[in-house]
Image 1 (cartoon, rainbow, N blue to C red):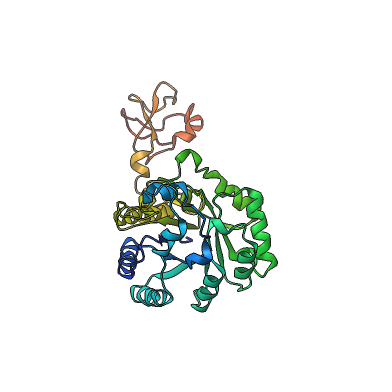
Image 2: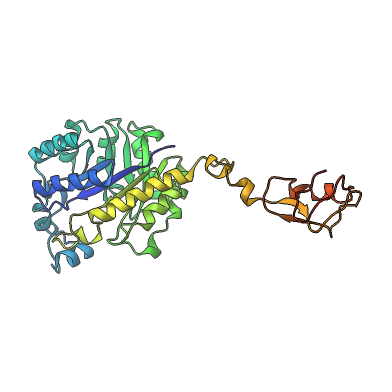
Length: 335
């Protein structure tokens, strides 16, 4: 059984506090996540002075027409913070990951030797960014919110042209709205991506609740990414579209159950159900008293539990035979 990789997306939900970031790590560990992911950026390298907040950010921040730059400056993690968080993750036995949002941050994360890259949806059309990451020849997880198939194809071509093999690429279906309306999830697109490009597939979820990631696992997702927070009511751009720790734990538990439930695809009797065959299946029995020498007929035979006698699948074989002894009503027929 292949284990689904579950990324607990802390993102910027630490609100710039190293203590909150560590608490998020604790909660991710308790929930059973494989990876906790943060975001690495220098605000001035990421957005211009005139960039306005996205609509969902304005709503969540309560700042109509607010500046992205002002918002992001408060959410940066320093290089020292990264080193401390990596050490803390090692102590807690969870993998640290972060997404770079500018070229300098890519170089910094490379120096940390994380061995895995997460490319966010907003960078799918950023050729220099994709090229730089591909040249490190390390596995990539690519989110595809706001994408057409042609965007995904172009990004994969850049990654492969610059040093990656197709088996190093996992593509996450995603919708970049916070929260994503269920009608816009289009979860079947995840499978279509896998079929078209021959890549491993997964799902990065921004819906409210936990149903869609669980469904994605049932459809073949190998990676699930989900935002989480300590408290949805905290101030910040992503808290309201995130799970709280108990919800994250419930989601991960459900995913692990689905992993087991998917099985091999080979239909067979399991050991757990084998003991119930005799009690649940039926046998051919006498519908009424039958005397030795009488013919077995549709009228004097019937089918009842238990399944310890002749299978009803042999009905036509038994009809017309002669009874070799007397049978009482409900006795199992012998031939």
